Picture 1 (cartoon, helix red, strand yellow):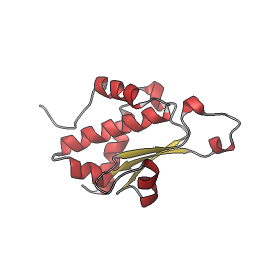
Picture 2 (cartoon, rainbow, N blue to C red; picture 1 turned 45 degrees about the vertical axis):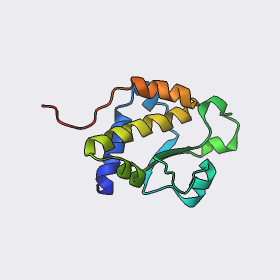
Picture 3 (cartoon, helix red, strand yellow; picture 1 turned 120 degrees about the vertical axis):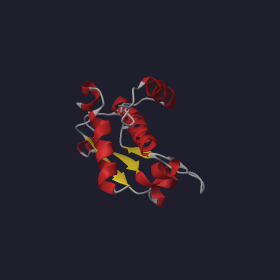
Length: 133
C-alpha cells in the first residue's frame, strides 16, 4: 500500500474517534513511519523477532504537570506501516489494525494501562473499510 493511502487510513481512524477524545489531542502529533527505529526498539525492549505496530512517546495526561517545561513540546504517536502490513492479509485487516493501534496508543496518552486499553478495544466499533453492500 502506498504511504499516502496508509496515512489517509490513519486520518480516518482518528476522525472516527468520539469528539471528546479528539478534542484532547491538540498537543499530540500522530505520524506514520515504515518501522520503529533501533532506538525505539531498544526503549520498549523488543527482541529481534518482535515487531511494533505503534508507539506513544510523551507524558500521559495522568502524570502531566503544567509547570513541566516538556509540556510545551507535543507528545508523539507513531504508527508503523511495515509491521501492520506484514501482519495483515487484506485491506480490511489493515484498516482494522490501524484503528486498533490508534485507539491503543491514544489510550496510553490518556494514561490507561494495558487492561483498560484492552477493554476499550473490545468495545470499540470498527469500520474495516469493506463494502458490505
